Image (cartoon, rainbow, N blue to C red):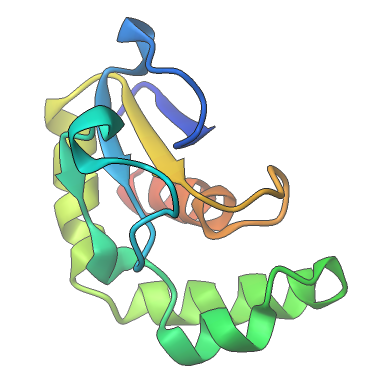
Length: 118
């Protein structure tokens, strides 16, 4: 596993993105499926609806969100699928829809997967 990137789905496609994986449970607003240029929508790896709703992208809840989401990931079979993809594809870019580039599930997921897969 060499490279895993993180990018808002609203940012323009770049060939350097490599294999593009959408990691949101809900399809991002305003993005046409045909324009998204995703290779895989791995919605089952996203935070649970309950966790996503509780977090509400509130930076004050970030530390607790990270802990809860990592716990969910530890029990999620989709993590193995993503780790396998990382071994096969290089690079991989995790796509997300949140406005906050520092406090979103893709940040937590990238860290978790890199630790898990090593």
